[in-house]
Every structure is written in structure tokens, then in C-alpha cells.
Length: 143
Image (cartoon, rainbow, N blue to C red; front, side, top):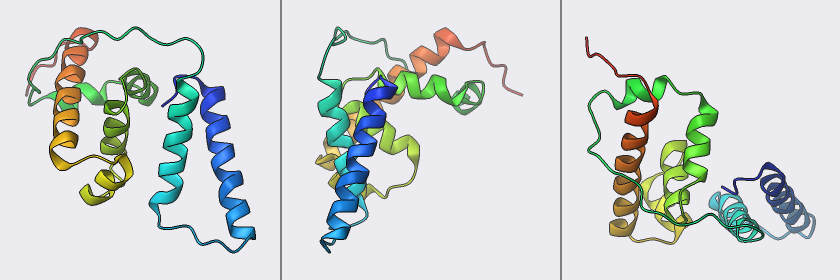
């Protein structure tokens, strides 16, 4: 989320400290999304510090039927790097979507988006990702 592993580690550790303090003070965490929400906001705050990337428009193309095969050619770090370069809230929407750990209602609550906004961010991100895949992965011949 931050594009900087040191910043991400600090956000994670400060979230853990906060959770431990709340637990020690017998304060119940609201729900299972509390940890993810707190970590996300800390990452967003950390990513706003220092140098900022230039915002640019990414190419888009329709998601191809063989996109999954193209993704399998990637190392997990390559997907993470691509997602971390997206602007927020698209970055958070794509991360939650590709983690495949949250229900739709949980993603909406975690990201503070409505269904239309979430759909728009994920659809645009998938089309941008497909354009990037087409430029960076070898052509895939369907069987």
C-alpha cells in the first residue's frame, strides 16, 4: 500500500501496538475489519509523506479470457508492485479484491465506498492491469 516496506512495517507495527493497548485496557475491537481499516488508514497517511508519484492516465483494454494464465506467469511481488502504484482509493479496492478475503459488504465498509464506486474502481483497475499484462507478459496461445 505504501510503496515503501519500512513505512508499511511501521504502519503494521503501530496498528498491532494500538490493538494490544486496547486489549490490555479491555476495549473490544468493533469487528474483524477494525485491524484492516486501521492498517489501511495508517498506510495511507504514511504514503502521503515524502515524495509523491506523478498522477498519470494508464492505458486500458478489455479483460481477456486468458488473463488468468497471464497472471500465473507473474511473481506475487510483481502483482503487489503494480497494485501499490495505483492511486488510492483504487489501490485499496484492488488490494481488497485480489486478497479474496472479504465479502462485498465488508469491502464496502472497509473502504467506505458505495457499490457503484467500488465497481468502477475495480473495473478500471482490471482493464489497466490487463493493458499492463499485455505489455509485460509473453503472448499466450490458447489451447
